[in-house]
Length: 148
Image 1 (cartoon, helix red, strand yellow):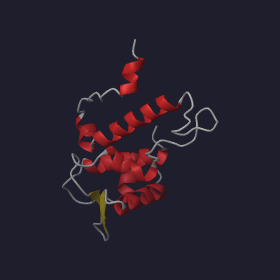
Image 2 (tube, rainbow, N blue to C red):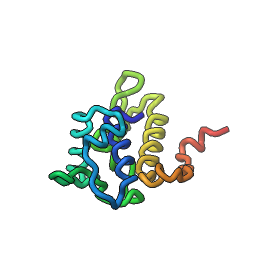
Image 3 (tube, rainbow, N blue to C red):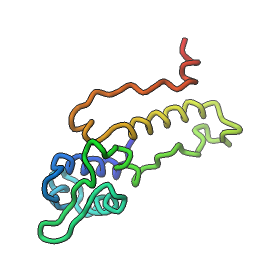
Image 4 (cartoon, rainbow, N blue to C red):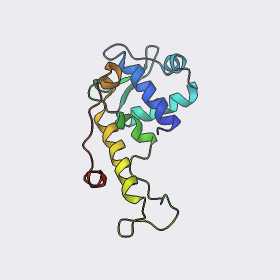
């Protein structure tokens, strides 16, 4: 569900989370370690720094580091600059569809979009690095009505 750019951003943030509290890591080093295109990753890292997810420094010992602790940085914060984080307004069935005139797929699409966003917002880099067990999200009210 993540775009390639969102995946690169998350991989880089996780890589930097492993070095939290240590020296900055160069974009070239990160790209090499992750086996991703260095020029492309440099743009991703620059954008994460602009968004306040990373801190950057110039010079011989320059590079990138997380702006916060891995337990404070959510997956949503990392991927939001590269992903559409709100539900799409394009109807799955190809017709006119909005809150006033929803199509038959609208409710379920809204539910899965909401759950996916909740997961991204409630998962931190530390959760991913530490293998923190997944906490089941609450079932949306309309899904309970559909249950047998």
